Every structure is written in structure tokens, then in C-alpha cells.
Amino acid sequence: MSLKERYVAAMVLSGVGDALGYNNGNWEFCHSGETIHEELSRMGGLEKVDVHDWMVSDDTVMHLATAEALVKVGKKPAMPELYRNIAEKYIECMEDMKGRAPGVTCLAVVHSLKPNVRNGWRVAFNPAGGGCGAAMRAMCIGLRFPAPSQLEQLIAVSIESGRMTHHHPTGYLGSLAAALFTSYAVNLKPLEEWGQGLLHTLSAAKRHIEESGHCVKENLQAWDYFENKWINYLNERGILDGKSQAKFPPEYGVKERDAFYRTLSYSGWAGSSGHDAPMIAYDAILRAGNSWVSLAHHAFFHGGDSDSTAVIAACWWGAMHGFEGVPGSNHQTLEYRDRLAKLGESLYELSQETR
Image (cartoon, rainbow, N blue to C red; front, side):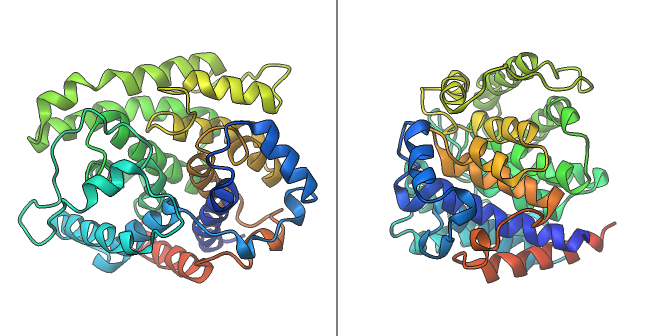
């Protein structure tokens, strides 16, 4: 399949993962993966699910906003112009949140953005800003800046768009991870190398924060948690070296995954923070191989913040595999499918102009 097809699939399937993990709010807030899998089984399994009546959550609405801003500014954006447009889109998208369970942090902070004021997209440091709201909307940044030569831009845009609402390293480094791993998926980088690649990128991310001059002291004081959690996870899977094959327990069913995902979390709700939403998505990608159903069982249907881990994992999977093996009923009637597909095409075209 073509790279353009993979771009379209990345955007569309991110929405699919979100809609399936959310299930109109029924599954995002269900804390038992076993209950979710039982309900899915009664529906006939994933292959029988038609997403026609499954609305996307705030995750996809904000991912659309990020992508639309990236496309609007075109092929050679000045960063202040891009950030102003992202802030405008985030404010606008709050009008489309009915029934979509927007996050408390996003709701509280977005309306303090002042895109028409110089640096008005910058907000104060937030000691409680470590949630996953920045990560869930950042994958398209990796589609826009996929080349290794564009890493500096990817770092800057993922961090600055992330801390428009989640100004805490645990929050906006989740945005970096979501975007960076999307670029890895586009380039078909071996999966075992992704985690080490993130750790190597964190020094450049810290340099960006230092050079920005914005709340530097507060950010550096809160920096280590994200990195330490990722080091622990990569050690657990035996892939800290970026070379070894990931190791999983012999028994890793629904119950075992719920228990493991909780150990990764900040406060018990797995996937709800900036460090563990992409971490659980990555765990699912490592486990699933080329199976859409396996990916869904691991990333979409669990007792944590399931739509946020799903929106991220499904985007990466689409960037690698396209729509291969995805039942038509899972994506053809998706809400906002056309918008997502067109943005995928546009992001592809923009990415090619700099390659």
C-alpha cells in the first residue's frame, strides 16, 4: 500500500480507536476490562461492530483541531503563526464537546489562551497538568514532521501545543511521545527501538524548554518523573537497549493487563496521564503484531482511560499497516471520517514537500 494510504489510515483509525474505546462514554469510564470484553463478546466481537452510532470523544475533536492548524499554515510555517492557529483551533473545538467528555484540564485552560496577543498561547506552569490531554491530540504532528531532519520542529510543536493546556513535563512530554512514535511508524522504524529513541530525544526536549525561557525552573524541577517511568517500563519489557525483543508474561489476558496497566499509572486510572497513555499504546503495538483485533483488545478495551490509549495506538497502527485487516464496519461510517481522511491526505502532501 502507498504511504499516502497509510497517512489516511493513521488519521481515520485514530478516530476509530477513540470511538471504540469511548463507546459513547460507556467504556472510557468502566474500570473493568473483563466487563468491557464481555459486552464486546455479546455484540459478536469487534468484527461485528458498526461504528455508525459510536461518537468520537474529545480526543478526536482536539486531534482534528491540531491537524487543521498544521494544514492551514502550509509548508513553511513560522512557529508563532502556527502556535497562534493551534490555539485558535483549540478554542473553536470546545464548541463541539457535547457528549464527548472533555478533560477537566483542557476545559479549564483553553479559554485562557489569547491567540491574538503576542505569546498569548503561553500559559502558566501547572503542577496538576500531567494528564493525557496533550498526548491524545498530538499524533498528527508526527505525520507533518516525520523526517529525522525535522526532529527539532517535531519537538518544538509537540511541546508548545501540549503545554497550551498541559504545562507540566508529564503532560507535554506525552505529546512529544505520541508525535515522535507516529514519525517512527511512518518510517517503519523497528518497534523495539522506539522507547530508546524517546529517551534519547528527551535531552533535546529539555534543551528546548531551557531555551524557551518560559517557566524553566518549574519544568526542570518536575522533569524526572516522565523519564523514570519510561525507563522502568522499558526495563520491564527488556527493551531498554533498543535491540532486544519485548518480553511479555506467559499469562497476559484481560485481567492481567488491567493489573499491569494500573502499575504504570500515576493515580490508578491507567492511561490518564501523559506518560502512560502512550506507554500503554506502545505496549499494545508491541504485542499486537499486524493484528487489528489484537491491537484493539490490548489498547482499546481495558479498565483505564481506554479512548486515550486507543486514539494513539490506532494512529500508529494505521501509519504502519493502513486499513489492512480492519473490517469495513469498523471505519466506513465513522463520525468525521471524511474530515480525518482529507487531513491525512493534506498532511501527506505537506510532509512530502520537505523530503
